[in-house]
Amino acid sequence: MKIGIVCYPTFGGSGVVATELGKALAAVGHQIHFITYRKPARLDFFSENLFYHEVSISEYPLFDFPPYELALASKLVDVVRFEKLDVLHVHYAIPHASAAFMAKQILKTYGLEIPVITTLHGTDITLVGKDRSFSPVVTFSINQSDGVTAVSENLREETLKHFDITRDIKVINNFIDLERFSSQPKGHFKKAIAPDQERVLTHTSNFRKVKNTLDVIRIFKKVNDVMPCKLLMVGDGPERSNAEELSRELGIDKDVRFLGKQDAIEEILSVSDLFLMPSSSESFGLAALEAMACKVPVISSNTGGLPELNVNGVTGFLSAVGDVDEMAKNAIYILEDCERLQRFKDAALAHAKNFQLSNIMPLYEDYYKEVINNV
Ligand code: GMT
Image (cartoon, rainbow, N blue to C red; front, top):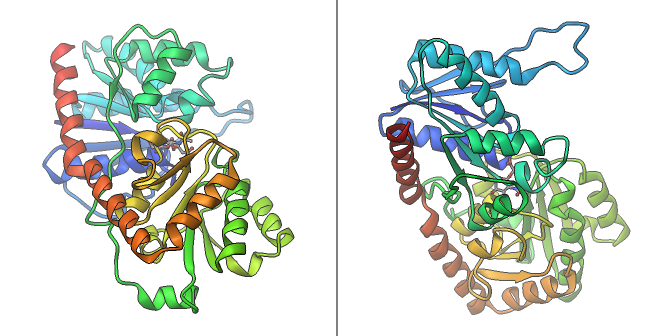
């Protein structure tokens, strides 16, 4: 198939899923066209089946807000016409689904019918999409898509609850490439971080409010009071300086390392004993799946799709959002006993295998075929 993929090209979960899916589809012979404003972060090599079309917007003094959606729709019309695409797969509803709808209507004037599939990722529904300034357009463009997928059962339910949806939504979970995300021997790195064999706790995110980054610091403080350990904070974003300040206030700054944005997440996870994800909203939790694939158990909140990923008492523990005491108690329970820790590590990997790329990619391929045949 010739597939157009529209996504945010950044380190965000939706962009990562879109890029990894496109790369995997290209590897099995599909022709993949990425259409976005910058080359996706993980599209870092050449392949005969991978193409990248940049959406550029002309500067004009009148434009306080450059109309990206229009430039994207125009580019989609071009790419579909001249590359003869079979399907457009847009990741994250805002503004990709409505731009695709506009392109679809324009293409009809050329006698072309392009099926559009929208994948809902999370904040496009749970946070931004619900906002009144977007919700009529989000509702309309979901209903006008030829196929819609959500990354968890919970996100599907949330979408049906909060929007007037008149069509089916298929659940296709996030996936993991186990060839890249696996526990690697990184003893020298671990020794540098935890010279006295302290346990290593890790958090990776975009440090947005929804990630409850300050709760990560609070949980760590409580664990560190009972057993000396280290915390790796990976990523960057608006809450980073508040988290740094809180760790200084709590007197644990020498045990907390802020590593900023990192590419080789799997190496950091390979030296980690526990992953912390206390988010206030999380449609699936791709970062937690990456941790589990590297044999790292997860202490998380029980919000959104997290219970579909993190099996309570098996791969880690789930607690109510904000219940820092319980999260710290559960973290200590896992970390204090070597055999127990090993059991949780093995279970985390075993469960992550259910979400491996080779299980999930065919679901997208089948769905593309189904949608194309129905249009
Ligand atoms: O807010 C983020 O973490 C980024 C966001 C995105 O769309 O880029 O991530 C969402 O999509 C991921 C991939 O489907 C999911 O694994 C994340 O759980 C989801 N984030 C939230 O729901 C907060």
